[in-house]
Image (cartoon, rainbow, N blue to C red; front, side):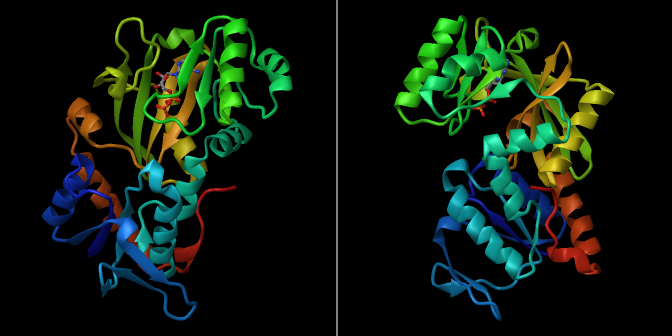
Amino acid sequence: MKIAILSRNKKLYSTRRLVEAAEAHGHEVKVIDVLRCYMNITSLNPTIHYKGEVLEPFDAVIPRIGASVTFYGTAVLRQFEMMNVYPLNESVAVTRSRDKLRSAQLLARKGVGMPVTGFAHNPDDIQDLLKVVGEAPTVIKLLEGTQGIGVVLAETNKAAESVIQAFMGLKANIMVQEFIKEAGGSDIRCFVVGDKVVAAMKRQGPEGEFRSNLHRGGSASLVRLTPSERATAVRAAKIMGLGVCGVDLLRSNHGPVVMEVNSSPGLEGIEAASGKDVAEIIIKHLEKRVAEMSNSASRSRTRGKG
Ligand code: ADP
């Protein structure tokens, strides 16, 4: 197959591993920086131009689109889709997963366990919003935050109110969440490929830190998932319409709760913690899907809902 990997930097661990795995399976791979793509949008013959050349047709595309380039990156991915290139994750699903409120609403509607979550726009509604979410401590999150930045634990209702007011004053979009204390500063990353969790790791924040992000000094270790954790992760991926994703769970008193579904999950931490060749598993999945899809009329149908 000819495979395009949409990535801004071919030296990144995840990109390198995907290139290696694809080449080891005899595929031809090109790493493409989405921001250097420009497009001709016509119904008859859509094309993509890249650094002065028209890109040759590809069989499959692997999007690794960073949060900061979601808008343009998903437009480029859509152009590949219009050219009948099979996407590992579809543009609509990537867009959906980048909107934390939309994702939360979608998962909640389908009955997936989640921390009690609220959001509001007007500062006058803060006190009532806090009542809806429950008593302090509460977690307040900037919707645009990543890697744990903009995630605050408010120990008291007064502190929560002040933090929310401050964020709203900055015109930041936020959500307020029940604090899952019993998770003990850890979360579980389930790496889903197709309809299976192929690897999982537990991330534990350093002493005194409730955020488990590796970027915030957390450490990763192998974990054994319960059947209900596996089922929850696979279900969340399916609802989001993502073929490959990282589903982050917290172990709560009332079972696994989903915190986030990440459409470009990193490979470095999960391969190191699980000892699995996740890159190869992804390439094998892609081979299977492309073979199935090339015989199927449902090729351009959108997966997932909402
Ligand atoms: P980001 O997308 O910036 O990583 P997350 O929502 O994943 O933000 O939160 C960062 C970390 O904070 C999580 O990995 C988890 O350890 C912790 N955390 C987030 N929300 C909660 C919560 N409601 N209860 C307990 N811990 C939480």
